[in-house]
Length: 289
Image 1 (cartoon, helix red, strand yellow):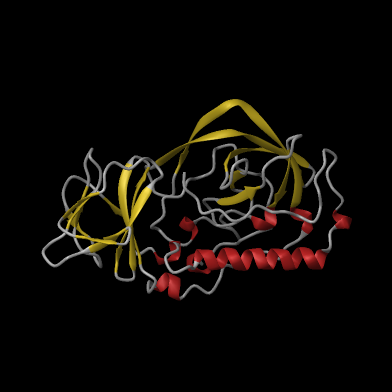
Image 2: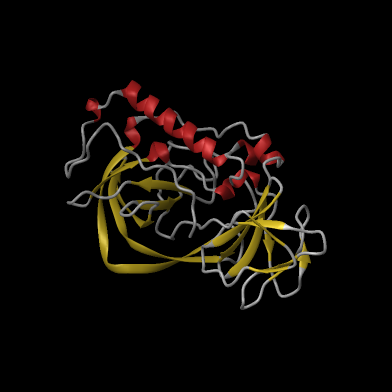
């Protein structure tokens, strides 16, 4: 699965097997660090060709199709996606101008290539065993009008010391997707065990952005009420030598599908549904309000 991940938390408290002392946390510094992190995450989300700039989700098939706003007739086969450009039509690929029939070759799952048409970046990717095209236009209204994501105020009470429990070998986990009928399959290296509100939970964890880092997809009792119904994600820094990790639910973020119907985001594994309300992190976007 492909997810744009925020930076994992590096808190002003060090987790231990016995937990950590919240009294040692500089609350003002904690809030400033969180605000800087969230501002950077929002800037990435609303970047010129970020996910808020996606204008459509187009599924390719054997029959060539035109896509509004970009040149060419687009199709795919076992040999991979193809765009056939008419006379006078061109695109940019890796800085070079291409024309005529452009064969992109077979794409591996969760990979893609970018083509450029003026200010528009055309993402050609493979998701859930299907080849797709997603144009990204900086002038798209969703991006232009985005006023920020509502959040819960940061609070150290939503820090949880945990322990990473590795599987004997990574396990393939199949999950649903924001697009009905689509599935994602990814390898999970293990689970994170932690205590929250006096209860102990375990969440299946996937590999994170950097080697050793982890990523958790989850829902909780706030999902569909104050937070996005389908999913939120939480990046977790790599476990230490004893398997200890720190979960900072203040950094729970929305996936692209919380903002747009043009995303194929994975849903959480069945066991990653917390029965408690996690009143921390990002809330339902105003775009979905």
